[in-house]
Image (cartoon, rainbow, N blue to C red; front, top):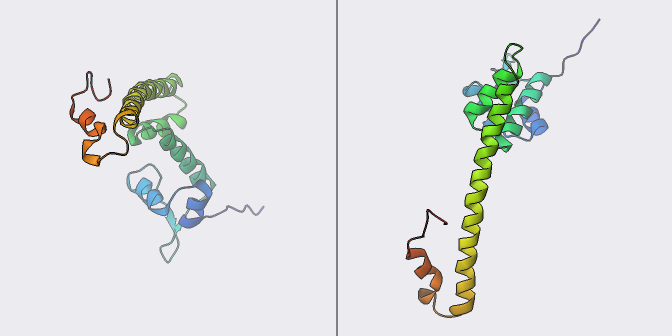
Length: 147
């Protein structure tokens, strides 16, 4: 029986996964992707399993997981000895971080909205040097960046 394995160049892999060729080279360099097989002329060759692995890595990065978290998740994805609770715990910790950042971003939004509103109400149209945003920016915030 003749089994045909699809082979992809680095450009085809990049296109199929929505990544760039420098990103693929970087992931190989740091060990997230195994080194590609090479043609006699040195061209990288990839297969369907590389598409799946790179798609998984890209999804993890799109979700904001760190390189080290991706490395652990990749290890977990092929382990039959480790419990999926480890994966859940990584995802939960990341979710907690995202939620904390959202609180910070909402506070930032509120503060910036205050700057814009004060400018619109008091000084918009006047000289830039008199803008209340500058005065607000030099006043220390009450709590942290945006409290």
